Every structure is written in structure tokens, then in C-alpha cells.
Length: 289
Image (cartoon, rainbow, N blue to C red; front, side, top):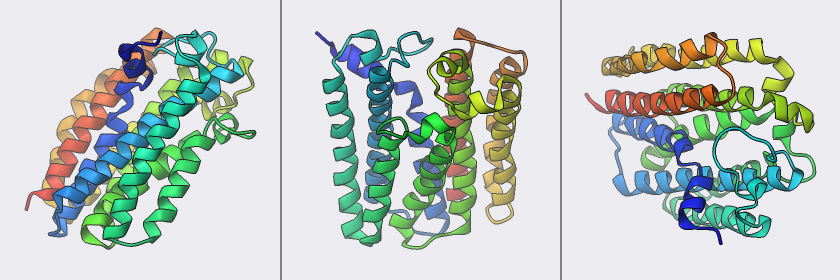
């Protein structure tokens, strides 16, 4: 029997900063436009968290039935390990997507029906990452999805539901958040290059190779701090996001030093902490006058 602890671990809680951070940044950008609406911010957070959990379960299901997760380093794979049935994990994924859809529907009713199209696109992209006959995550486009939906869409959308317009600070924050979210995915895919290559899962890391993927990771970690400086031209206190810089040192050193396997799990954890700290600091910096 699958325990609650198994389901929690299968949801991959260490990836949740990728869902929380952009909402914090988007809310900061909304406050910078003098329009903080706390209940809409909470609904945006629910959408983001539910999508993140949903895509985690969906990936577990799709990779599990393809046999990609039979030999993996890292978090528990429910289907691949046989701890849970494929059917139950698929149900968990769509239940999570359903929660995101309901919260998104409420936001659309409060703002604009166009958000419904964004929500449909987000759920379709979340499922299509590793699901369906032609998953784009197996062709090297996973980072595009993460950058767009857990960066631009998450930040700009959070700002929009509170301000009801797109601001340039939200765009800058979306680029910063998307870069860090991609850094997490790149780390994950560098760790899995050997097994992904065996199963014809041509992630961007597999296509680029180990060395170039590590260079990409380093660039993705630097980009957010550049955009924090850019945002500071309008909101000077955005510079407090630079206080997160020390958190980038350890994962950068590990990646540059050639960390592999379980060592990259530590990089994943450190990058998640960096993303959350950066989101809190940048969001606060944008919100403060």
C-alpha cells in the first residue's frame, strides 16, 4: 500500500520553490504598481503549486510506464519503483491539474476570460512534457516550457491578476525567475544524462553534453542577478536580491567541479534554496517604496 509519506515524496516537495518564487516576485511587481490584492495572490500561488505537483506526478507516471525511471538517482519514483500503480499516479496528476484549473477559473472570473486559455495551455504543456505520443521533454524542449510557464507566465500572470495589466518589472522578474527554474531542470537532466541517453530521452542536457550543460547552468544562475540590477533602475531596493548571491556559490562550485550522480542532488537542493531566497528578496525589494 502506498503511504502518505510516499505520495508526499512523489510530489517532490523540494521542487516547490520553483512554484512559490515566481508568485512572490509577481506579487512584488504588483505592489510596485500600487495594487497588492492578497486573495488573488493566494489563488495564483495555489495555481502555481498545483501545477508543479501535477507536472511532478505526470512525469513520474509517463517516465515510469516508459521504463525511463527503472534506474534513477534522486527522489523516489512512484511508478518506476513499483510503490504506486501507474493508474493512481496518473489520477493524482490530473487531480492536481483540476485544483489548478478551479483556482485559475476563479481568477479568470475576477479578471479576464483570456486567462482560461493561458490555463489550458499550461495544463497541456505540463502533461505534454513527458506524456503523450510525442513528449517534447524527450526532444530537448523542457527548458522552454519551464522558462515560459514557471517564469514568464507565473510572474506576469500573478502581477496581472492584481494589477490587470502587464508591467515591465513583471517581465524582468519573469525572466529572472524562469532562469532559476531552468537551472533546476538543467541540474536534474545533467544528473540523468546516462539513463536518459539509454532510453532515447533527448533532453537538452543529452543534446548539449555534460560540459556545455554545466556552462548553461552557470549562465542561468547569473542571469537573475543581472535582471535584479535592471529592475533597480525603477525600484532601487530590488538590489537586496543580491543578498542571495552567497547561496549561489556552493552549487556553482559543485557544478564547475564536475559533480555527478548523488552529488547533483545536493546541487538541486541548493538551487531550490537559492531560487526561494531570491524570490523572497526580489519580491520584497520590488514591493518596498
